[in-house]
Image 1 (cartoon, helix red, strand yellow):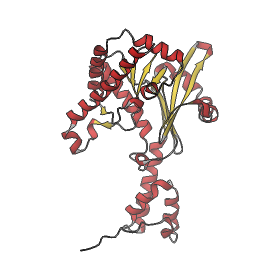
Image 2 (spheres, rainbow, N blue to C red; image 1 turned 90 degrees about the vertical axis):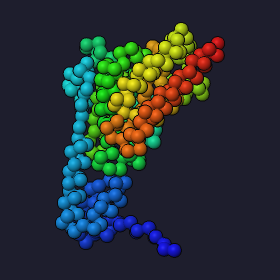
Image 3 (cartoon, rainbow, N blue to C red; image 1 turned 45 degrees about the vertical axis):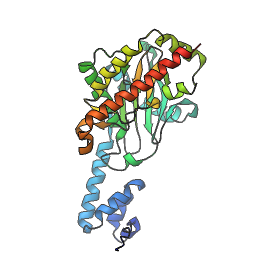
Length: 305
């Protein structure tokens, strides 16, 4: 029986004699080096240097991006951009009591974009990347927050075309996104409510629970389930969500259900062969899961005092 030993992984120190390669490898984040060490292993020094220079240039170009996608805040945002970024970095992101949500690679904080002169007040949830993970280790995959914003925008467009009746089911509206080589975040509609994981655990203030009970008590669960069908049909023209669970569904005081956190979503145009083969089943599974969670929520309302 033959034995297959794992191939030893290269080290950046293997290239100390080649100052250009060594310096190029140092320019790549530590968590990304192993992949690129493996790719240059069989290349000549000139080819390896060309490969690394191209990767670093593409990465830097890809990570310098910012867009205010909502016209209602664009003029104010552009006029106060530096002040807004400074406030986010010094006050919003550094305040541990400001946390709205926390995942493996990102956090969500709250922030109010306020223009007192024109009476504008926009409550935002700011999602920002805090640590690299499995999906953030390549030039193609690391910019998942910006891709998440793009996906939300496409879902809103699809919803407007395909799901006009689904007025109570939606995604959080995206307002802006920004990234550079060290930092990325986006601002979205802040949902005045609670996710259904926390709801089932009895969290949230008594006042919030009373408000939600009032907002949903007279709603027909079957009509709401039909809206889930409409909304998910529209969403599924863009992507599979990839992680439908109580943590990723939120209810608001206005009586709406929000589908949140598209970090695990898969674009329909980028599915693998097996996913394409099972696409109809995957779509129906996501709808079914959302309905089960929703019905559990409605059942809990009947039990509320």
